[in-house]
Every structure is written in structure tokens, then in C-alpha cells.
Image 1: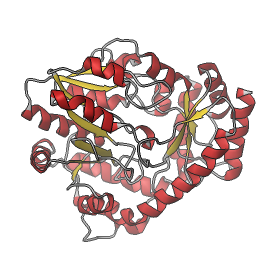
Image 2 (image 1 turned 30 degrees about the horizontal axis):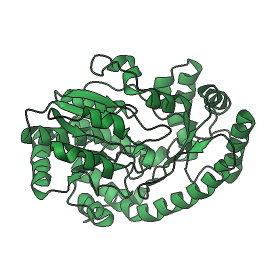
Image 3 (image 1 turned 180 degrees about the horizontal axis):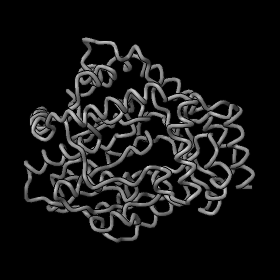
Length: 395
């Protein structure tokens, strides 16, 4: 392996310089046609998309103030709910699963709940159908958080579905998002609210354009060594786990309009996305089979529809076993990391807005799970080395 070499933690679609050429293709229209979704709205981030969704639902039912979310999900979800002046209610996961614990969810539903947000974590498709079935008697909306699942079979059951176009999330404009609604009236409301909440801010858009240029130049094994690997290893040496995975988010959420230029870059790259996702799916299936030959571990796979494969989520038998694997591989350039360090209730900086409640299944999931990149740049030899370390640690 070359010295200046780094695998990304997720399999993002690399950009080409020709993606910056002008195009007549509309990003939201092309994505909508490709994914068979209603008209999509482009936002400056997945977080902004969630803020717009919650604002639209609040206008419909202003008396409802509670939003139910998985106990293990991105901290930005909590920050978006807080930004909208709403209260967060955590729901545990099923054991060894990304699905919401429906038994607990049933006890949380009432006329004060505005929305439930099931998460298609890591590109895996969660069970939205059962959530929709449970909330219907209460007229509670379902927002599908598909931030990490652009291209997956999602959006069938939720009232609103949102995606992220952040760096490494498959298709990217460095920071961006997409959202839509099944109901035409609600879809129109999302567009109206987006126009109000996302003003033209040239300074932010210039920064994102420069960052996207950097992504185009550096999203490759050599560039990632300098742009990602060096700072990550520095954080790991200091045992700053949250900084190492990028979980340290700010309460201030940028809201601004996305320029046509950045949208055009993604519209051009979108032509390569279906083939790229197909390649990732084939590679994932082969590597899942290899991992499943290791007794005592579990790979999180789809049970409710076909997902996408930016990385593989692996549950080790114990947290000590997981940490022993990370001790050997986390600082390597092999694309091994953790997704979110804690459940939402365990982040110190979220304590003012997230209830301090125990969520045993989600806590167990966070304590035993690691991720393996599904980037095409991770060679078979490198993956075999990862499997050997896991097998030697588990056995």
C-alpha cells in the first residue's frame, strides 16, 4: 500500500472536472425521474431539509410539539428539531436492529406528537410501513430520514422523505439536501417554505463552491490522506472520538439557497450514479458473505427493501471485542470507523435539548457496532486483512 493512501469512511461518488461544465439538466427533476419520486426541492443540507419539513407540518398542526426519533441517529436530527422549537422524544431500537422498537413506540403515540422520524441508517432500509400503520389513528406524520440512502427503495410509506447531498453521501454538492412529499399540497408547501427559509447568501454559497472544488480535487486515495486521514488520526491519538468521526455539530444551522452552478455539478455526476450504486451493491454482497463466515458477528442487512451500500455496519459480540478490533484498525487507512459515537442522550452537548433517558438496545448497538467502508478503492487484499483482524479478535 502506498504511504500516502487513505480509504474514505463511506463510498461517495467521485466527481470529475467535466461535471463542472454547464448543463441543461435540472438536478431535482432528474433525481425525481431516476428514483420515481414526486417533485423534489433542493436545500443547502439534509438538516435544512428536515427543518423545512418540520416547519411545514407545524403549520398544519401547530398544537403538536413533540417529535419522536430513534435513540441512535445523527445528532443533527436533534438540532433541527430544537431549531424549530419542538420537543424531542426518543424511541429505542429493536435489539440488533436499526428499526424502531414498535412496542415502545406504541406507548409514546398521542395527540401531542407532530411526527415520527424513522431513519434509513447507513443506507439500510428501515421498516417505515409498520410505523405508518401505528401512527395513522393519531394523524401523526412520518418523515423518512434517508440522508444516507439516496438511491434506495424509500419514500413509499412516509409523508415526507429527505436525502442528504453532503460529502461522501453518494451524490454530493459538498453540503446539500433534497426533500419531497407524497401529497401534492404538502409538496407545494415544502417549496413555499424553502423559498422563505433559504435566502440567497453569497458568502455561504462561495464557501460551499470552494469546498466542492476541493472535493473534486481531493476525493481520491491520495488526496484523502491529507484532507481526511491526517486530522482523523490526530483526533484518535488524543482519544477525541467525537471529533474523529465528525459528530461535534454546532447549534447554529446554516440556511441559504443553493446556486445553479453547484446543482449542475451534481446533475452531471448523476448520470454515473446508477452504475456506481450497482457496483457498490455487488461488492457489498460479496463482502457480506465473507464477513458472515466469521462466527459471532452480525452484518446489518436489508429486510424491508433494497438499500444502498456506502459502508457495511458490523455488530461485534461485545463492546470490548469491538474496541479491540478498532485498536488495531481505526488508525489504519482501511476505512474502518464508527458511525455515531453515542446515542443522542449520551452526547454532552445535546443534554440541554435531549431527554436523559436510558435506551438499552440503542446503547448496545452503538457500543458494539463498527463500519467498514464499501469504497471501490478498498481492495480485496485490504478487506481480507480486515476480516482476519475481526476473526482473530472474536475467536
